Image (cartoon, rainbow, N blue to C red; front, side, top):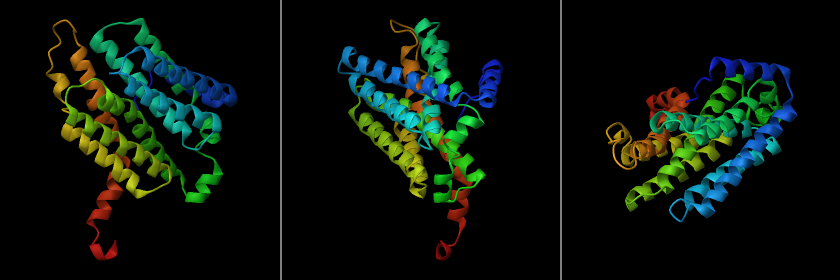
Length: 269
C-alpha cells in the first residue's frame, strides 16, 4: 500500500526526479532518517520502561534505513520509502482521530521530505537500477517493479508491527504473537532482498498472525469518550490494523504466482 501524494507534492517529486541533485537529496534523506534515530533513542530514555523496547526497535529500523541510503544498497530506497510512507499514514491517521497537533504535522512533514527526496528515476538509477545486483539475480523490469512494491510495503508495516508487539499492553499472549509477527516480517524482508520465495511466505505468515491475534477491527468499535479521548481507537488502528493492511498489500504482487504454483500438480513442482 503506497498512498498517492497530493498533486502539488507529486509534481514536486516528479520535477526533482527529472532535475537530479541526487547527492543532495540523498543527504537530505539520510539527515531525516538520522533525526528519527536520535528521536526514538531519546524517547527510549525519557518515556519509561513501557515504551523503551518499542522506541529502541524503531530506532534500529531507521538506523538500517540510514545506513542503506548512505551506502547506496540497492534495496535501501525501497526500505526507507516504506518507513516514510508509514510515518505519513500514521501522522495522517493521528491528525484525523486525535485532532490537530503541530508535533504530528512536523512528524508527518519530515517523513514526507524523505519520500520526496527519494523519488524519481535518477534516484532509482542510483539504487535499485544498479546493474550488478540485477545481473546477479537476473531481474527484468517487471521483476524489479514487483520486488520494489513488496519491499516498500513490508518495510512500511514494521513501525506498526513494532508498536503492536512492544507497545504498552496487558495481554502477554498478544505480545508473544506480536513479537512473532515482527520476527516473521524481518525474516521475510531479508528473504525478499535475496530473492527467496520463503520471504513472501514469511510475510504472509506475519499477516496471518496479526489477523488472528490483533483484533484489527476493534478500532471501529472502541469508544472515543472519556479521559483519553480517541487514544484507544488510535492505538488500535496505527498498530495491528495498519500493520495488517501493509502486510496484505506486500504479499499481493506475488499472490498470482503463488496461486499458479499451488494449482500445479505435485509431480511438476
